[in-house]
Length: 349
Ligand SMILES: [Zn+2]
Image (tube, rainbow, N blue to C red; front, top):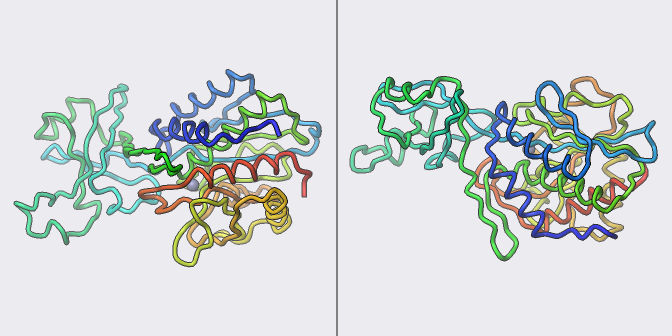
């Protein structure tokens, strides 16, 4: 097998992706970054009207095709209101819990291209002033952004060029540890995007020919539900999403395995494809967990709901504390990369 599945390369690629702010609706920069990387090794890319990127590797069979997808958009926020104190009230983009944002550093992007840093805080943070600092509800009402600028009124903030509707990105706080863990926000789904990017580069550089023409969609609106629901060529038969596996009480998934999803909130995934993925994992002795994701939907469910007639599947590395202080291990990334690799070279099920 010419592909080496280098864990450090995978971790570095993911680090690169989480370092580029990309809340849903603000993904041009990360899409351009991935497009540059792919075109520099000679992979043909196109973009759909809503800004998602489609990379295509031609295969032996062009009549029946495959599509894979990972999303590069993340949770984030928008400036909802500039308070008379010069603090900012936020509106969330995607499913964050306010409590998981407390104390987080953030960046605000203005229309003129400036960016400003700040910290997301409870209004009642100082324990020397507020008796209820510990107990007050973590909510949109009580939380605000303290800008790192000398501002004390709404006018001061507006003079910086900050306005309602500006995008806000959370600091990923990425750390890669020597024992193989990666801690970072937005591993959902930049871990999956990193795996697909790695495989595309490896397949291209090793000049491997795939059995079927295969499209890889880097979707950019998954967190709000419609990322991968369009731009699926009519020849596509199988649609495999690479997105995070769920970890918690009652779950099989862990930070070292690739999760193969049997069902999520949107219902069962295609049984034949699921069984095919399990067989591949067993044949190649990969660490995998067959699992059900309780509060979850993917780009594949979005595609089916949009009316596409597809065989759909979902796999991905187990991510702990998802949509908050996420962590996974290089073992889960390698197991995911190997499963997707073997799938790409396998016959359709
Ligand atoms: Zn996701």
